Amino acid sequence: METADQIAAAVMAWTVANSGHQEHRDYIGLSHAAQSIEDLLASYRNGFAADNAQKRKYYKGYQMEADLVRRLGIVFGDRVQRGEEISAFDGFVKGHPDFRFDGWLGDCKTVPLDEHLPEPAHLPRRVFWQLQAYMLYAPAEKSLVIYESRETGLLRAFWLHPVRAIQNQINEKFESVVAKIKQSK
Image 1: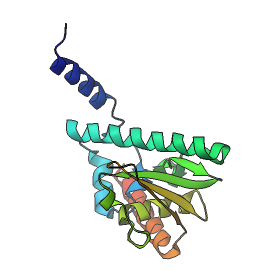
Image 2 (image 1 turned 60 degrees about the horizontal axis):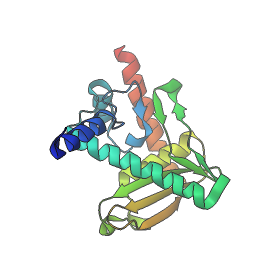
Image 3 (image 1 turned 45 degrees about the horizontal axis):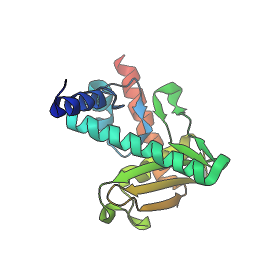
Image 4 (image 1 turned 30 degrees about the horizontal axis):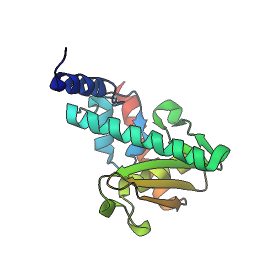
């Protein structure tokens, strides 16, 4: 019979193996829209290394996001649908919003503590640009981002609207990255 430590180790090994983390992608993710051209190219070429602790965090994040989408569906019924892939530049650039709410794009985020929940005017740049990219290429005139604290389950949600100047920067950046990728092939 296994020891308690062996049982825990076996479950953790399964969690790491099923974390959902992709070390290599054949596309640039819309969730990385805030990154520099150089960083986007590096991640496309070199992938995304992650250690076991990071993979366990990814698993928990995906698990919590899926649960939040499930709860949204329970509360709002058919108004909530699973998100579908967004693709641009002949599939070189892709993203996958977590859900749609009344047809509008939606994404879930988690933070460790209540005090890390953002205020409307202080959304993390990475998340703000990700949603701007989703709205640009979907296209959509608004999107919803919902944050959940892992500390207490406190939720905070924000409707976002397109900011054309940022979307133009995103488009120019992805155009440049895709051109550089095609040149190197």
